[in-house]
Amino acid sequence: MPRKFTAAILFTLMFASLSFAAPVPPSKGQWAFPLEDTLTLYRKADSSSRSEEIRMPQKWISVPSAVRDDDNFLWYKVTVNGKSGWLPQNGIRLKMGGKSKLAANLLKNYVKARRKVMDNPRGWSSSIEDGFTEYSTDGGMFRVIDGRRGVEDVFFSTNDYKICREFLGVDLIDWSQPEVRSKLGTPTMRETPYESPEISILSFELEGSNMTLSVLERREDGDTEGTVYRVELYAGRTGEPEY
Image (cartoon, rainbow, N blue to C red; front, top):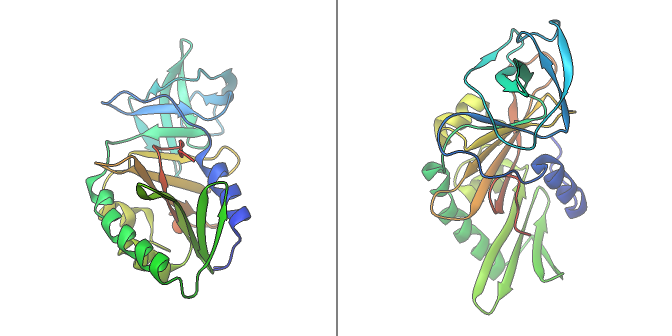
């Protein structure tokens, strides 16, 4: 797995994965938010079943049930504009649980590691642009606002297991989804980009703070489970970085 990346590529990936902000979902139940204007609604949870393209409302849609097909991809049962059927996982953000206390426990470790780098940035380079201070090294970077009221955390990303362990206290890189959920519990949200069904993004909104931990997984050909290839921590709720 490549360990080196530039800040420009990193932020392109970040905003591609986060899509756009959705309205706040209902507090209870399982809900889907379409990330595309139109999606294919299938009669069954099977891509070979009858289907039709439908215009998707930009609102949360109730998902009374979800199933996995023979390839271990998710399908969501929905009713849209009076038509009932199944939507495949790609192009959908699924609201699963509440804010995460387990993910919030990682924040203290992150702040400690970030302060250590800022105090002694050996091996890290820094730059200031548009009011942000950015620190980067092979396999990782973070951005802060260093103002009169102290340091405000904005964004962190890594694809390196050592940096992940140093900053979050746990190495999530190359973990499977079951392993991630055994450590962090139920995600607040999960989504798959429309053009990339092999990607799963698990978002854990941190309890007690306006920050989100995003775990990005990728399935290789022939795999039934994806593994983590990048971890991000950003200010704001799912898909809504503040900066």
